Amino acid sequence: MKKELTRQQYLDLYYYMRLNRAVEDTMVKLFRQNKIVGGLYSSLGQEAISVGSAYALEKKDWLAPMIRNIGALLVKGVPPRDIFMQHMAKYDSPTKGKDGTSHFGDLDNLHIVSPISMLGDLIPVMTGVAMAGRYLGQKIVAMTWIGDGGSSTGVFHEGLNFAATQKAPFVLILENNLWAYSTPVRKQVPLENLADRAKAYGIDSYIVDGNDVVAMYSTAKEAVERARTGEGPILIEAKTFRRLGHAQHDPAEYVPKDMRAHWEARDPIALYEKYLTGEKLLDAKSKKEIEDKMDALLAKEREFAENSPMPPAELAEEGVYCTGDDCHKIRAKWERPIAEVTPPKSSVAAVWTVPGFGAGKGSGGANAPIHFGDAPASAEKSAGARKPGAKILTKPAAKKTVKATAASASRKARR
Ligand SMILES: Cc1ncc(C[n+]2csc(CCOP(=O)(O)OP(=O)(O)O)c2C)c(N)n1
Ligand SMILES: [Mg+2]
Image (cartoon, rainbow, N blue to C red):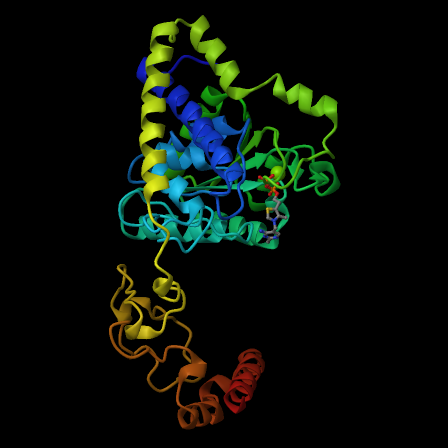
């Protein structure tokens, strides 16, 4: 562990790891009291990853957590009460009781995109966020996490390839905790290091000890700054271990005892405490101060959450399916003039045009008929029947392409 942080930063990392664990311990108690409505996942033993990586982000940066990243939410500024209430499906929760786990975000203030349950889907989404930030000239970095199991989904590869091609300022933390449900990593990936997946996309990667919060922070910090300066996306494999089952229902008896024992002896909080004490960054007094601060906060937050009502039954239907203006108005805040979002002018002449293409209104008005299939049937028919230009047909190589295009156009028009 290199000494490169201020004392306050060292203590912040400690505080957030402790808070991460305490928030989850509190939720286990709530779960056993039958007050948690949905599934309850644990990041026991993985706190250094969430906390160390999120701590490397600036306030303006964006993150999207997965199930084991409560620590990242806390670092970003989510109050524990929101996490409690969300899992208890309370009315004051960010989703007003509509979700029983962690599917909430904060696009306006904290720059958090809600988790997506489909493993890997956050990768293209956060790539898009990173690209949008670049488009807007904000110099932001987007970050998300994925598990060893999730790194075998198709969208992981599509997403990372997309991020690499676009050189998106995006950092992906791959939490290799050796298990995906009951599947050991060796049975689903023929690689020793999952960081090697980066090679397929020509991007840089790091391997880091996920139980060492300082290593995690400094690696993430370097990756974030490299991504911010335009070097493109970076993959970080954090080696760790899932200390509990997949969720509360899973006793994880399939995990070999010696493997568990090995990792339990490498608890990230205990390791860090030893380091801080050795470096004289933490003593009994400052430790007690941190614990008192944490306990007071948690007592207040838990009380608030427990006292929050369940949502009124009559609101159950609201905000679930969007029924247009009668339901709620969702308008893109990033809406841009239609001319900007239509394809740029190209040196290749269009073979056909669709009436109304690019001439639609924004989301405040009618839908823009910008897709071929959106044009009125009569317009499509005439567009599809349009003959390719005679000039192009005189060139043999072009002739073939044009014919194929025209044929597929008329096929589409007949659908
Ligand atoms: C595309 C997709 N397939 C399957 C699932 C069901 N599922 C949820 S978590 C999980 C295991 C994930 O393992 P891993 O990615 O290693 O993350 P970990 O639970 O170890 O943090 C599975 C199979 C899902 N949510 N999405
Ligand atoms: Mg895993």
